[in-house]
Image (cartoon, rainbow, N blue to C red; front, side):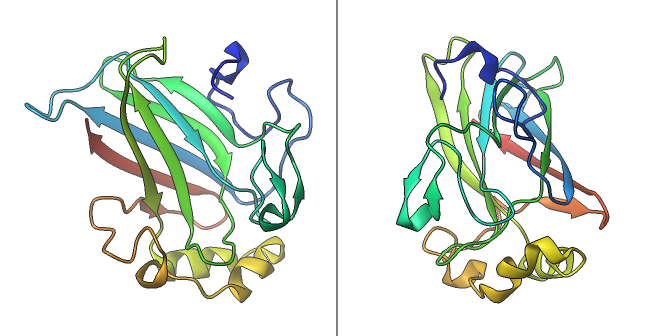
Length: 182
């Protein structure tokens, strides 16, 4: 996915060519990247974000665990470049939950838009109660409510989410923000 120039975008609700818009609760995701040493803003970092759709399916994958063949799709994937304040924002939809995983968003941070030097790969978590409350506001997320995988039982988050927990506000549309250091 990262070799396509069109992946540099901030609205990730469609395939790279603009087709096949995904639906769900609107999500405005803001990520602020800082330097680990002095915590100063990291301007010009490339931030790659990807997550599943409302049904727990990932674009660019096929197979039983993914619920079908989505290999030709590219929705809910984007790379943005941080501004002078170290911030990048994405327009997306609230990800669903799937068997074995709590609600989450994947992230990789690169030193610049060449994507040559990866500095961090991680995942962001949602508070379990917040996720359940949000899923309860939209019938499209019924499958996520039936999947009782929470952070304390998730194979990635069960050791704790303190540094990976998104700050979430809103219900009809959601704002989520996090600060990370690289």
